Image 1 (tube, rainbow, N blue to C red):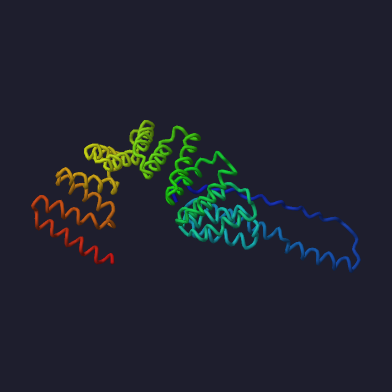
Image 2: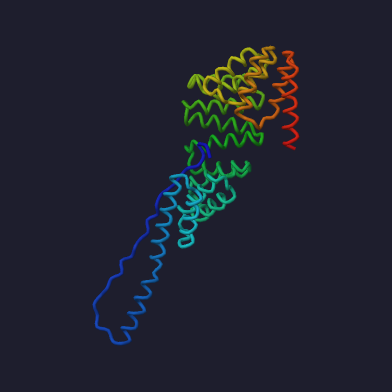
Length: 325
């Protein structure tokens, strides 16, 4: 998971070990039997299970540290079978499931924590993140709001809360949340970028451009700020400026298939067919799943009068389309 996303909590629980005192007494026969029974009871003390549970939990943490999430999950589950009230084990179990994209399992584990610790701010954030990645944005919003209620300075939660609002079309709410994020972190380019995207999605292009420029003032090479600026120029019909910003974005990451594809489209508008073909080919190498690119390459070759090459790509496009169905 990305991200500004999962708060990895790996605090080892401390168990209180009760010392058992051995006094010297003279026992009758009956007392000796009682002592033997007491010794057997000590052998089966719940403390033994706690020790084993704690060791299994710590082993799970070690596995997770090295990205061995399957093994970590197994250890957390074994630990919880012996000590079902270890909220830290549930937290880290949820994180391990989230890393495996097993969001239903992660949600179940995080809910176990909330049941036991209803004011655990990090768990509400992780629960929101799991719902967010699962695409259940109303539940994500509910948990992110709870996070910032418990801790108004929880910066990461504002970012995902704002994005979740945009996902369900509540742009005004998203704008307010992103503004709050900027209050908390005024020097973060991504915060201005997100606010600009929310403005753009609402159709407020002038405001969006102002925010993108603020992001670029902080980080002139910010790939996604440059890309979104290019998209905005494309939206307003300024192809030359769009091309300029797409190329600046590619200076930061030449393999960004979305940028290459948009750049190819704009080169087609400018009748710069060789440049378009080059951009499209890089785009398809980075994202072979976008089969529309084959059709675009065919159109570029066709515009150049290269009929055979064009037909090869059109055939490839038809073949890929058929396979996809």
